[in-house]
Image 1: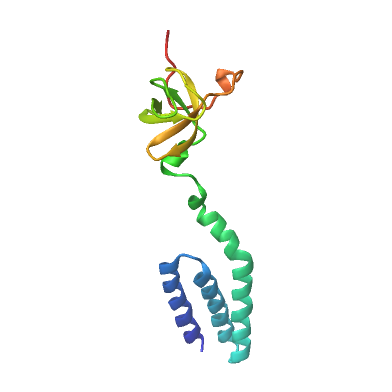
Image 2: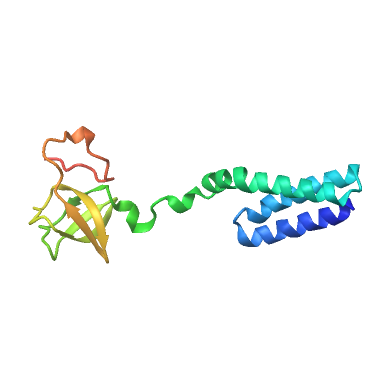
Length: 157
């Protein structure tokens, strides 16, 4: 009897490798529990109850925690959207339609919704619109030491 549960558990683990949703992994845990129960008793009812209880406990309590901690990379910003919130330096005057800015060593087309941003100032990236950084003038009165690092060396006079 325990061999049947072992086969069921292995099949569930193989299915889990293709889904990576942790549902079949939790069911495999229940099947392993039923397998160990089968070693001690021949009662199918006891084995099915153990399988059901362990599977439900794993699905309800363990699976959410595992999904949150193992697959946390999907919640992070990536690619160009990771630039939002960082600072950049304007290389040209930036208007509502045109301009250039540098962030993390890369030169980007830029635009702003807040008038004209002059050349050579630190600005905040508030969004991405196609291939343009959307920039905003920094708040006045923020000390330079508190400004986030943009990866750009300050200009020397």
